[in-house]
Image (cartoon, rainbow, N blue to C red; front, side, top):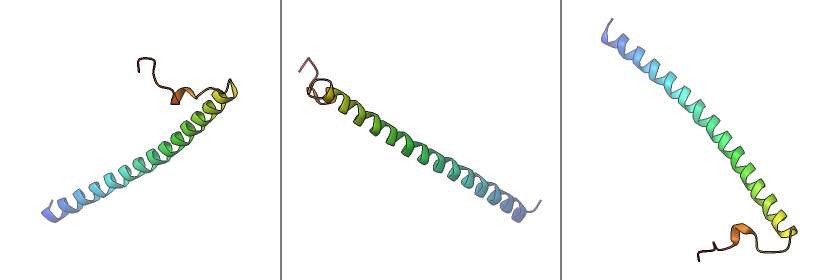
Amino acid sequence: MTDRTALEERIAYLERVAEDLSEVVARQDAELARLTRRVEMLLAREAEREVEGGGTIPLADQRPPHW
């Protein structure tokens, strides 16, 4: 195998690895965005429930007891 062939094989391998990693990052980005939306929805829902449950300050906005 010549040096040129070895380099071409190495470049082809690295291109494939870069494409695979790009796909992984794209999937993770979509998953992170989906999970972020769900957390925001849950936080909003819980804040609404706390307000409806007695009109107190939402738990997330209260100081911890040791303050």
